Image 1 (cartoon, rainbow, N blue to C red):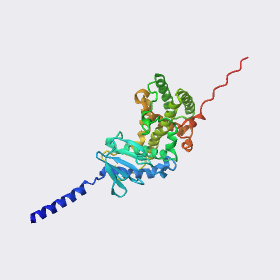
Image 2: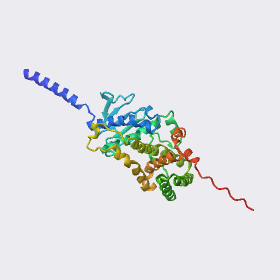
Image 3: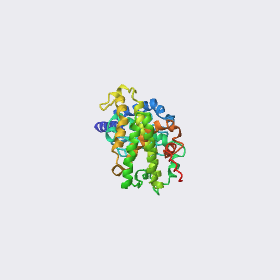
Length: 339
């Protein structure tokens, strides 16, 4: 009987020990990156965009087996609290995901995998990818933003939001592809021109060609491309500006000790060139929707010089950058009167 009591007690202790070890723990490297992201954002976000810090900033980190949620005002019931403002559940999203959406109802949540499982690959690019996604929280946080997206009329019955990725834009149109190549060439020429006197005519040439390009599109195609440039393109622009704003940022020693650490100065020195190099290679037929990232980012860089106050009107003109270019469309010369 004594041996039975000991056995039962041993089993009870083993079960208790297993229960404790079974609680998922945020990997130390992931915890470092998340803390560094929030520290970085608090220092630079309002420099990059006015009042950016005013919107909620929940984040869901996806590891191979588990999801970790933090800074959410109302964590769903299927999440277990495991720490101060940290909740967990078994993994449901793909580990490669880089997205921002109202996963549990408003507010929008940054849903992102660990660096090595995503396109970011390493820690510092991952932080600025999160800053890109953080800007989507500002876009989505505008009153009535989801209703306004629906009013575009582009979903055509899709209630999942996947139309934003799968909209049937005419990427295969050969004439449109050739026009895109010409347009991206003009955009790069203007953005890369350091001399202000030479920049102005190049910018006007681009603006005129842009207007002609958009005029070739159907109304829905025009709305879709405008929406993507406004949303994803400017978010990539924000990724560039965030990287440059952080050039002199001093990370914590713990973050700098990560084996895949890259200095913020090094990232800042190449982030703009990387995106412009991407635009130089962009292929409308092969890349499809992906072209909007580099293209829209370059448009943001162009607007910084063409209309330095453009950010003031960004949320007044939802889902299109057209109004910022309309004032710069070259006027046609009047026809000479016939004698």
